[in-house]
Every structure is written in structure tokens, then in C-alpha cells.
Amino acid sequence: MGTRPQAARAAASVGRRLSALRLDVRPRLTQVTVGKALGKSQDFVSRIEKGAQLPTDQQLRKMLDLYEVDQAIRLDLMAEIREARAAESEWWTKYVADLPRSLVKLIELEDVATKVSIASGGLIPWPFQTEKYMQGVDEFASAEVGAERLTTQHAVRVKRQEIVTRADRPVIVDALVSEAALRPHVGGPAAMREQLDRLIEMADLPNITVRVIPFGAGGAAASQVNLTIIDFPTPNDPGVATMDTGTGVAILDDPKEVRARRRRFDYLCGKAFSSTESLELIRSASKEFL
Image (tube, rainbow, N blue to C red):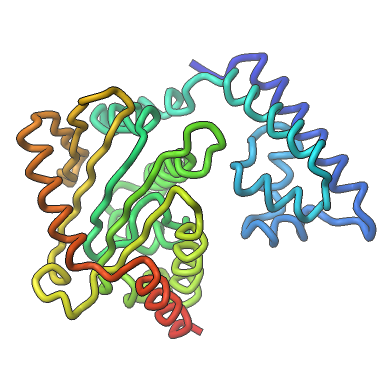
């Protein structure tokens, strides 16, 4: 199932409007300049303006700030983008042939979730990972599964991240990360600095909480737990938990299993720094990669 024709037309309309707004700025802004402001390439901006891709809400806000767009136009554009998204088919359908069925199921659950609680051990949690960080983490996997397949997996992960920044029903994320995840030179110093700065930026969003489990937390800091709990809007729904199997993901919907993982998550929360202390630590770690 591909993108519906009305979705393509809506995306093209959004692209034309954003292109016109950029060209109206004096002195005129180039696609290269806008791409740098977004942390993306000129090609990325070009795809948006051609209607091949819709910007995330965060990217749209940055573009409209750059173009000094007034509130009336902002609201109108955001409404048009919501309509374009509503007209789209589920984005993940085009990847189904390349993904484990369990991952497709997980993506479907994430799309309707209200909250995702993550304890990621020695890695930056997936909703906040940059593409360079993903490449650094999966350096070995590139040789095992092939660069092309890995590129697809990274593209899917980037799309999954949009549940956090979308205007309609942004998912609440409560993330725990070990201090050990802040120190390795994953992808090199520049890539790691970019990753930590992204984490700081995302932690500033109202629906996101990031807390660090410091080295001083002992066993909790040393734990390589990879724990995710997903909650849904239905009253009394116990939610589900997930577990990485190495070749896919196991989705655990037994209420006892979910409760056990909530207790584990709560235990780790009790060992973590506050949000404010955590951000101070992340900023300090970021400066070490200058």
C-alpha cells in the first residue's frame, strides 16, 4: 500500500508554500542554509519543497521561525500538514517486506500509544538517536546484515521517532539512561557531541522526561537492561512490555510480565538523578567532546 493520491497532493501543496515562504525572505535563504539550521542536507529541504516528504512539527517550527512567519500563516500551514498526514496510509506498510513481523507489530502499537517508558542501559534511547549515532552503534551489524538493509532499518527508526514530536497525540516518553551511555565515542567525538545535544534538545519538550542513572548508583548503573513499557488510552489497559531478542522484538502482553517490568522500571527511577541534575550531567558530557 503506497501513499494515497490526496496525500501526495496535500504534501505537494505544503512544499510549494514552504518554498514560497523561503524565497520571500530577504536576504534570500538558500536550501543549504535552511538545511544547516535543521541539521539536515540541502536534499532534505528539497524533498520537503517538492512534496516528497513532510517536515516534523519540530522541523516546521524551526523553518517558520527562520522565515519569520506570522501566527495566522503558521496555524494555517499546521492545519494543512495535519490534513496531509491524515490522508497518508500507514507509513510503515512500504517497509513490511524488510522488517520482522514483531517489529511491524511494535510500530503499530507505538502509533496508538499514550506513553512509552524506556530504560536503555548503555545506549541513548531510540526516540532520540541521531542517524550518525545509529550508524556508529550498528557498525558491526553493517558487515553482518549489509549496508542497504541497515540503511532501511535506520530509516524506519527515524520515522518511529515522529510519535514524539507530532502535533496530534504526541507520545509521552519517560526515559532512563545510564551515565555509561554518555561517555563512549560512538561514531566519533563530533557524532557523539551531536547526539548529546539532540538529547538535551529533546528533553526540553513538555512530553519528554530524561533521567540519568549515575555511576554512583552501583548495580543499577551497571545494569545493561533494555526495558520498554507501552501504555494506551483505554482505561484499565495493563499495557505491554517489549524485549529485544537480537533478531527482532518480543512483545509481552501478560499483565504479570508487564507488572514485573514496571517494578523494575520504578526501581531504576529511584536510582536516577532528577531531570535537572541529569541535564547538567549531559551538558557536561557534551562539552567533553569539543
